[in-house]
Length: 311
Image (cartoon, rainbow, N blue to C red; front, top):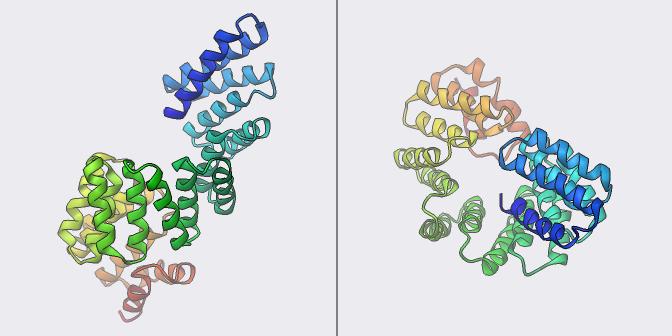
């Protein structure tokens, strides 16, 4: 993990320069032991060592930061946010801590707090692409697509060789139905990193919009080959199979996606579509009306709700 390693390097230097100070030496040793456990993929033990460092110095911002990363490894978002906030409290210009807290706010559904951290990073350092990257992500979640696109474009100007930024820009263009421009950005991203799974997933979504269902399936299968841990890849595969009239096979992948992430409304929509295509009105109406109420702008929901009602 790049950020963790940078902290480790800084602290190695700090230990060398303050070896005569037993307190500094001791708390630094605990921090390094925690980092070693993180490298060994043992975040629970790492937490114990970071806590030992904090017990020696309750203002040790690097220990709070690395402790937050350990919580993230355990998917403990609230605890991670708390420790990132402690790190920032004792070091208000701690760029990496603000950036990681903003990302964690996004994962935790706290979009406005994430936006505040994005704005804080821009004010702190407007020459760092990560500042605008976080702003772009938060504006995307808030569906401020013009602002999101502007932020990603600024990030790309600062870091033109970053394929992730190009894929994010393409995603916003896709939302805005600018499919040709989105495909052009994906071509640029693929030239930089042909092994980026999100690139192929987004390409599949564009192909689906163009009713190229078999090509869409081929693209998302490439994404799954590169990263088999993403629930939404399987959900998209299930959707494309439905439109290729492979209904039961499609349902298997939709259900797999729901098992991986029960909160994804797109997977529930696809399950509703499955029941419409099977002619099962009762089951379809268990899904689609609520989705139409809660997500009225979601693609295909209104269309398939009407079809379900006509069964």
